Image (cartoon, rainbow, N blue to C red; front, side, top):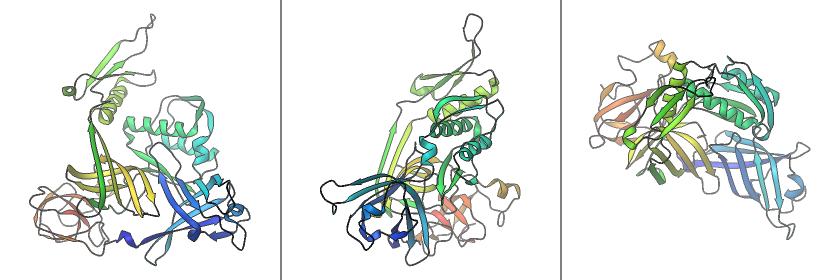
Length: 416
């Protein structure tokens, strides 16, 4: 099993002259984060502005220079957590030896903060529009598994590109494209459907969580969507359909206006997406756990709380590199089998995702390739995910917590 306490970070400064310096020993208050409504990841730290053989850190780390943050497990290979260009340089005014505060953003920051005017005729697809945005700003796309649906007319005269990207992905989701996130990895943008992580880590209150905050609220719910058609000569819009959701919480109505390029069926589909997103009580879940640098925004985790359990995707995450803690904001989700696996019927024996099985008892693991796990009792469980060929190829979730606590990856032959 992965031991989070064996992870460590180090920070490298790249100067204007492309010289690299490991400044880890000068750094404190180091952290990096990916927030829900921002494209760019942010790194912040306080640096002891001591004299070095090359001068004070403040003379080396100017705005526009780069900071590279790496992490490693035990003494293994170093991996890049993020890289960012310094946008805030704030040495203390008291004396040159006082701390220097630095803030850096990855290469999505320029796109996030820039305005532009765009126009696409009806029928433009999500992937092409997003690719055009990034190409204009010279940001290469390394991976795209996000939505790709048809859109109506896209016309923006003066708007932040970061907002445009968010709007186009939000619209794609309403058209059935699903949730997606954008992040930068080694200087390349990735537009990913949520849950692109290979390993799904398990967190539980009694095992590896520091704190949990779980709030449920019906404030802001939508329980009815009324669809209006095109205006007539008197500028009146007819009611074309009404789609009800959970009206047991009261009538909280939202109006959708059908565009001339959208059919009524498309408008109804959008209404159902609105009810899917906003038509049920909001759950605000925030957890603090020992830091795993590998977890990023958009990844899926498994969470076991006293108030419930299940799969959640990370909508925002903050890594505290000093305390080696991370704070995750989560949204409930469901695991879906890979289409390629389903289409090709890749499964071992007669088992597939969704089956209820009898777990024999034994060990469950936090990931499909973990080297050690937790022992749990036997009982009924549901297959929620599979990773053929791995050490522990099946992910189970208990049917009855009182019977068995199995909630993780298990070995082949451990159930029937």
